[in-house]
Length: 459
Image (cartoon, helix red, strand yellow):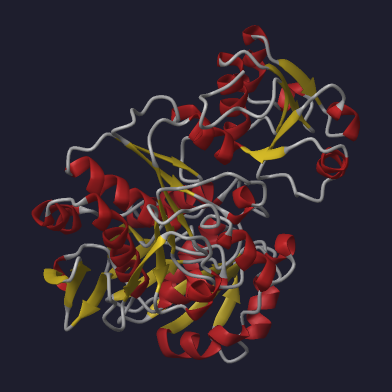
C-alpha cells in the first residue's frame, strides 16, 4: 500500500485505536488502499457507534472491548486516537517494538493531494479555522474545513484536488503522534495553560504545539502571535515567518491600528476594514480575525472579498453566541470556554454588567488570577458542576450561589440580572461531569433560555 512516491503509507497491517470519528475515517481510508485493518476500542460492541460496527462489512476486523498490548501482534503500524493518552501501555509496547505510532491527522495529510492550512493554539482554533475556510470559499477556492473542528482529515483528504486547500484545526493531542506532517501554512494563535492533566507542564504543552512547524521548509509559511512571547519563542522549522498583533504593527502580516485592521504584505500597507464593521465580538476574536487574514495573505485573495466576509461572518455555535433576549436580559452561550483563559477573554468582551454561569469538570486550573476581572465585570456568579467549590474558593469576594442543574442556573441568573444586563454561560471548565460534551451543554443552555423567555417553569 502506498499513497504516492512522495508520501508513502507506512504500513500494510494497521491497528487503529478508538472507534470514534477519526478512527472510523482512518480505517476506511486504509481499507481503500488495500491495508489489512483492525479497529480496537475499549468499549464493548453495543457501545460502539453504528458507523464503526458497520466497518466489519467493509473488511475491517473489529476488536471490541480491547485496549491491551496483545493487539499489537502482526501489525506494522498503529494509528493512534487523540483520545487515548500516549503513555498508554499499548503505545509504549508499539514504540518498544519499533512499530510506528501515527496520528489520524498525519495519515490524512499523507494521503491528501491538496496543501494544508493548519491552525493550533489554546483558544480560538475553531473560529479561526472556520473563518479561513469562509475566506477561501468566498474567493472561489475549493476547500474542506476539517480536523478537530468537524470532519476527520482522513474523511476528506482524497476529496480535494491539488488546486484546493485543506483547512485543519489541530489539537495538541493530535500533535503528540506526528512525524512527517508539513503544512504549507501553519498558524499558532496563543499559548496558555491547558490540558496540563495530560501534558504535565506548560513546556511540554508548548513542545507539542511546536511540532506543527518542525517539518516546514522555506517555501512554507509559519504564522505566529506577535503579542504572545511564548508562541514566538517556541516556533520551530524553516517556514517563512508572518505575524499578527492586536497591539502594534508587524513587518509582514496583519495588525490593528487606530480602529482599523491593516495588512502588511510584500512591502506595502493596506487599511482593510474598520474594526466596528467586523461582526465578531471581543478582543480575542479580533486576534482570531487578524490571524485568519495573515494566514491567507500568501494566497493573494482579493481585498474586497476579505471585507465582504468579515462584514457578514457571525462565528461558530457555542462561542460567544447570542442565545436570546427578553425582558431586558441578553443571554450569551460561550459553552466552548472550557478553560480559564477562554473565560477571561469572554468576560473582557462585555461593557454591561454580567451574571456569569460557570463551573463543570475542573482541569486542575487556578481560577484565582481571574478574581480582579470578576470584581470588575461580574455582578453575580451562578456555579454548577463538580468545579463549583474550587471556583467559589478562588473568588471569595464575589456574590455567588450554587445551582443543582443548568435549568436552575438559568432561572437564578435571570433573577439576578439587571435590566440591560448580560447572562453569560462561560463555564471555564470541561463539561463531562454533567453533559456529553461542550456542545451538549451549549444546546441545553439554549433550550433553557428559550424556556425562560417563553415564561415556562423550571422542570
